Length: 314
Image 1 (cartoon, one colour):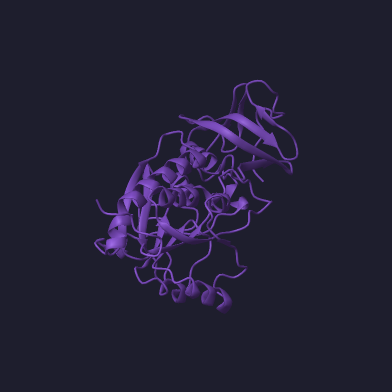
Image 2 (tube, rainbow, N blue to C red):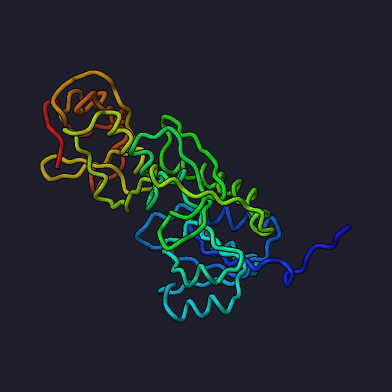
């Protein structure tokens, strides 16, 4: 029987990671006995809803040094990374783009786990964008990192179906498990140099930018009921939420369901109980809502203050 390799003989793996995908992938590396020499991560933003497990805590519990530089691309950070002598670099939902000087430090390559089926949905917030766009499946992609974000050759992918009522958090948790599966399959091939790298088809590429809280505004006049529902489920808890307004007051819609049939002018309150709002096509039944600054309510048990004939929109 062969003896297991010591840490000095195993490839030195440097991880850049954050959020639940980062946690799952670091945990998978540890479960495989990988020689993880350090974790670069981010401090939690106290203005953000932190619903995911801490990659930094997982690293510290396993004796892995944790680093959080203000600027990972600074000359000091680059020299520090070079001094760690990584053989492999992984980025698992790390929020900063790594410069090529860092990528070139790893003799076995540098790889990123992206939250879509590349080349579709390159860029930021893919888990939210696939829901906004009404996709029925997505997935995760492990790919080579290059100077262009999300454009490197593909190592492996795992498809994740999107359920009709999945929220972004539902989908994200499924994708975190898919990322673990991809890493489990790919790590031995990357270490041995047997991984097959497939170039992305640029003709199929799509790119989506960062989403801001302001992007949650509902446009009743341009959107169908299905499109509005997709926006609601894409940005409901733990994200900032979809919203509309009436007479200067902002109304958050945390959950709803789409209804077929033309029922009124876009944005019009056409029923108070149940609470129905007309869209460009069809209508939305509001199930949970919150006036800004107030508590969240179940629409079936509380008076929303909306009356038939009112037109919503900021």
